[in-house]
Amino acid sequence: MNENLFASFIAPTILGLPAAVLIILFPPLLIPTSKYLINNRLITTQQWLIKLTSKQMMTMHNTKGRTWSLMLVSLIIFIATTNLLGLLPHSFTPTTQLSMNLAVAIPLWAGAVIMGFRSKIKNALAHFLPQGTPTPLIPMLVIIETISLLIQPMALAVRLTANITAGHLLMHLIGSATLAMSTINLPSTLIIFTILILLTILKIAVALIQAYVFTLLVSLYLHDNT
Image (cartoon, rainbow, N blue to C red; front, side):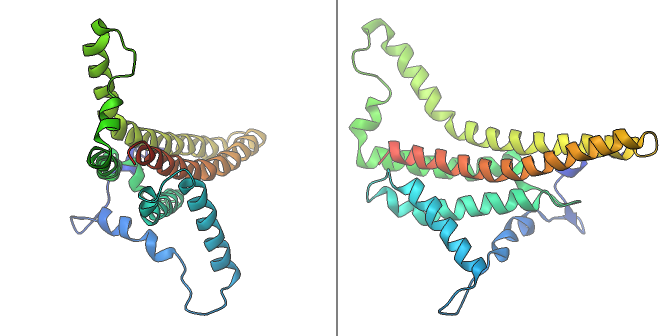
């Protein structure tokens, strides 16, 4: 009960050296691969999910946008596995760090915007000034559209960080309440423990949904610039 509420969000160290890089590189090792002609059920299910997700995200893209398919599929797998591993006890979730999420969001957003300015500069500039805008409102609208464009990677990172962090804090609080009530009132403990189980199921769904939403928004930014 005396444990710091935010202790699980502190970046871990090994012999004084940051271990976050090793933790970030660990999830790809859990993705199973097959060297055989006939795959087992796990590999088949994994390939079916990847094809379903990539098909849903890539149907709206043209040929140039579909060159990002491998990157987007890798992104959703990385975020999903990282979020799910963070649900394990005494584990560290890199996606609770705003700096890590910004490091992922900014290059992807910048790549999509730069591609848009290189391939369709007229359409890219047209987003800053909608057609039929009154002349007195032109400077204000240009400023607003510029700010809305620059804030996109921040919105991506903050959304992911806030959702994952809020879920971890809520699970920590309810888990602490369950432990405290176990020596006071058994029926109340069972009720709180049931709520904790339901919250854990919800947290698993949120971990997967947030990975999909993050990747889908990057895909939409790419669609607007290709």
